[in-house]
Amino acid sequence: MPSLLLIEDDDAIRTALELSLTRQGHRVATAATGEDGLKLLSEQRPDLIVLDVMLPGIDGFEVCRRIRRTDQLPIILLTARSDDIDVVVGLESGADDYVVKPVQGRVLDARIRAVLRRGEREANDAATFGSLVIDRAAMTVTKNGEDLQLTPTELRLLLELSRRPGQALSRQQLLRLVWEHDYLGDSRLVDACVQRLRAKVEDVPSSPTLIRTVRGVGYRLDAPQ
Image 1 (cartoon, rainbow, N blue to C red):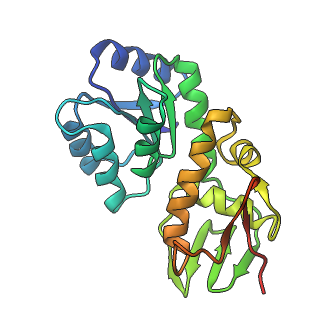
Image 2 (cartoon, one colour):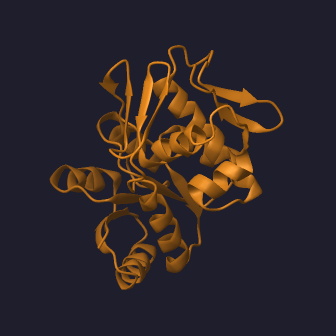
Image 3 (cartoon, helix red, strand yellow):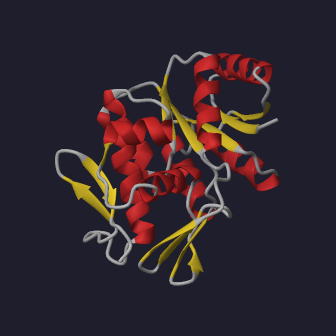
């Protein structure tokens, strides 16, 4: 049974989502503020965090940043707006996905399960891309022999690219493969995740040699030499 931490200040929304997600088979702990959520997180480790953007005190963006300093737990943002600023700031803060309010419990449950599937183990093989080694059985990535701390979404994106070395994948393909949805507006999910992933795997993230942009198409992972 997956365990969730729901951080939402609106009492009615928090109660409704807690009830719905519990019925869907999740264990749900709740907090009404970012501070309380961070305190709960220091006491227990959920499988995933559902985090509202507009919180009293420290907002959801800052909560997300603080979590990402020490932990790669998957995070889904709840936002009242789908405009570029809110979504991009949230994704750049380290969120794995976002859902626009008002949200139905079943829709959120589907997104949660899709995110959690990204951390499931795969076939027993490995791929090497220069100093980067992707071990699919252990679900680990090392660079120059050192473990990289990737979120489940970053790891899944890298795995999907590594299955097709040298092949360009469109943003829509990656949305289907990694996020399991393909709404046109959600191409921002791909771009933000690629940016975060490059910061971890590339020697010079501003001049990538592994994860290449294919103009007008999407991205590719350069084939092993």
